[in-house]
Length: 464
Ligand SMILES: Cc1cc2nc3c(=O)[nH]c(=O)nc-3n(C[C@H](O)[C@H](O)[C@H](O)COP(=O)(O)OP(=O)(O)OC[C@H]3O[C@@H](n4cnc5c(N)ncnc54)[C@H](O)[C@@H]3O)c2cc1C
Image 1 (cartoon, rainbow, N blue to C red):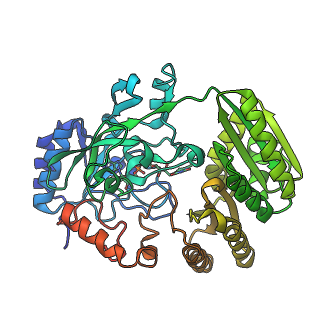
Image 2: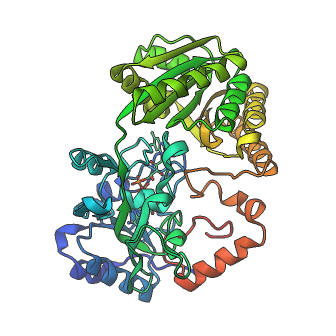
Image 3: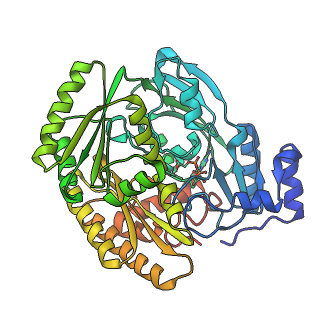
C-alpha cells in the first residue's frame, strides 16, 4: 500500500497533538534522523516528534494509522543495519525526552524505565544499589532501541542479551491502543510470551513506551586475561574448549591481528600483534577466579597459546575493553573515503572455528581489507569490510562475499545476524534462514499492524 507523505494539513494536525516545540519538519532535524551508524544511504523523514508521554504516542499512532503515515521509533540511532532509517518517510518518534527512571525496585532487583533512557546512564544511577543492567552494546544505546534490536554485547556470554532482562512492557499498538504485557514475577508460565515478540521486532509491531527490567548483582571481583595464539583458527578452537570445559567467562572476545595492530596505533596499547583472546571472569572470591584462570591457561596452552597474561589490573582491563568498544570507530578512521560493511553472523559453538576460518579465507581471496573480531563465546562473528565509496567493483566483491559467508553460517545452523538485527541489509536472507516460519512472521505483522505503518521497509524481503 502506498504511504501518505505529510502535507501541511497533516503537519498542523500532528502539531496539535503535542506541544508545537516538540514537532519539527526542519531540514537539520530531519537530516539528523536520516541515517544510523551503518553504511546504508540516508533517507530523511517528513517530520520528527519528541513525545513525552504514552498518551501522546498513542494519539500520534492513532492519527498515523488512520491516514497511512509511516511511524519509526528512534533511540540513539546507533544501529548498524539501517534499522531506524525512515525509508518510506513519515514521522520519527525520537524518545530522547522520555528518558526517565520511573521506579527502582531494589528489593525485587527491578527497575521501571522510559524507552529513551541510555543504558550507561541507567547503570550510573544504579551504582550505589549493588545492581546493574548487564547488556552492553558499547554505543550510547537507549533501552527502547536495545529492546527493539535485542542488543547484546561483550558480556552476553555470561549474562545473556536484552531479551533475558525484560519482564514487562508498555506498548502502543499501531492503532493507538496502549497495552501492558508481561509481569513482575521472576517467572511465569501464563499464556503466550508476548514480550519476546516485541523484543527484536525493530519497532515493526508496536512502540515501546515503558519497560520493567530485571537487574543483577554487581560482581564482587573480576579478573582479566589476554592470550595470544599463532592463528585465528587455534584461538577459535580454544574458545570452543573453554566453553566445553564448563568455565563461565564473563567476556570471551576474539580479535584478529589486524585489530590488535589498530589498537596499538590508535589506543597505544602496546600489545603483541597476534590473534588474541580477551577473557574476563567475574566472581565472589579471588580464590574461585584463580582456579578458573588456571584451567583457562591450561586450555589455551593446549591450543597453542604463545602468551597468557593473567591478573590484569582494573585500569588495564578498562583500557582494553574501551578499545574493544571503540574498534568500529577505529576501523572507520583507518579508511577515509570508504564505507564499512559490518557483518554479525552467529553459529553454534562447535561450528565457530570453522566459521572463522571460512571468513578469513574469504577476505584473503577478496583482496580487500577486512577486520575479524567477535563475541567469540557466543559464536558471534563480526567482520568489518572496507570498500571505497562509489567503487562498484569493490561493492560487487563485498556483496558476493557477504552472500557466501551468510550462506555458510546458515549451513552450519547459524543466523545472518546475532545481534544487530535484520534492518535493511539482512532482509534478503530471511527466507533462507526462516523458511516457512517467515510466513508466520508476516501474519503476526499483519495482525499487529494491518496497514504496515510501523517501520516499513524492514525485516521483510518484499517490503518497499
Ligand atoms: C560502535 C558501535 C558498537 C556496537 N556494538 C554492538 C554490540 O556489541 N552489540 C549489539 O547488539 N549492538 C551493537 N551496536 C548496535 C547498536 O548500538 C544496538 O543495536 C542498539 O540496540 C541500538 O540502540 P539505539 O538506542 O541506538 O536504537 P536506534 O538505532 O535508534 O533504533 C534501533 C531500532 O529500534 C527501534 N526503536 C527505537 N526506539 C523504539 C521504541 N521506543 N519502540 C519501538 N521501537 C523502537 C528503531 O525504529 C530501530 O528499528 C553497536 C553500534 C555501534 C555504533
